[in-house]
Image (cartoon, rainbow, N blue to C red):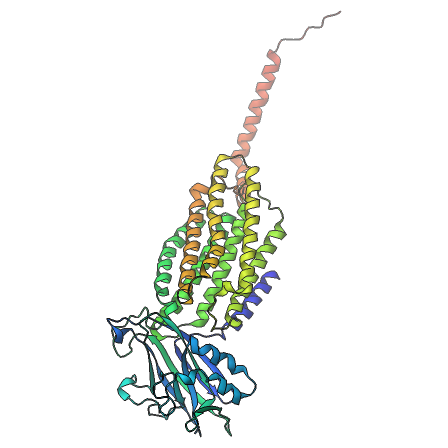
Length: 505
């Protein structure tokens, strides 16, 4: 029943998460019942002064509609400094007032041929006429071939995030004021957009960075590196579990295999994303869930060994408490993942450990670490075997590193820019997990662990086979012969013994 509930929870979580989609090739619709639609947040790289054309960021695509519009609505590409006020005012009930406030700051810097001819190129009037360029595109050679509009993002100082959205507002070219567009009938705008780092008109762009937002660039190399490490570690551990079929070895192998499976799924998504800007988001999210299950099962293994299970004792004390803590930690970890996807606003430059569920999981992990140390100390106090104590000492030191790295990393990440934070968290997290698995595989290697594991006795099949062997005819005859010989020897000894004398007092 417990397993069914766990699988049902994972199914519900995956169903919720699959609704979330992030990619750099965007396809969709903007309908009349939507006043505002946020499309994507994308990090553009710093422009290289020596190769500006090859290192610009580009946004290009097509935005069309089957309906005719009396006035066009607005497609906006904004930096964070302009986007925050624009985004916060979208929720006003009076949409006419919302349009005025949303563009009060943007319109002072956005290019408009009549109202602000010296402004920046932030806005486009949409939809664009079918088969033609958007009305704001005055230079055809500046537009990527086969598309209706193009933005070129240039920043020689630093990489930066840009925010893409659509809103049902238009500017009155006579008064230069913004108004809400309220059509008499429903409309649907279709869009097909690309956001890339590099020039799409040249073939020399890097496949490893072209489709990726700056904060996700070079993550493909990280995934490939750790995948190669696991390609060595997993076959070795599979050989170990065949050699020594022990419960501890089986649990560790299951945890390692879950982590390897998660990495494979995420790597497939990332490779596909590098090619088409879409990837397999559902596959990546499934990989994330397997990654969480791997870490929670590994934590369970650490807790069991700290209590001395299979090392100093075969029976586990306080079994319900151990499994209850493990289950709670796993559920909280998965709920944190869902919270990060569904509740954290994408415009906020925070990671999962800068939310209250994130701090909760860090505190929970720290408390489990303290309990782990207490149980390990208790186990070592009652153990006097040198080899077992040596194992527990090395096991405790490596496990403590795995427990404590996450709280320290979360504190460091508070002071790291969001442009670099994801890669920092990813690199250190995968490094710590890989290190922990390598050390554990070394400690639990069959030729070493047989010195301190309390292995199970012979199986029932072995016992039955031994009984059959003992009941074999030649064994029975030998037994009778041995018994007769022993009886004869005893009789001889009795007859040769000196007789006792009775002495009368």
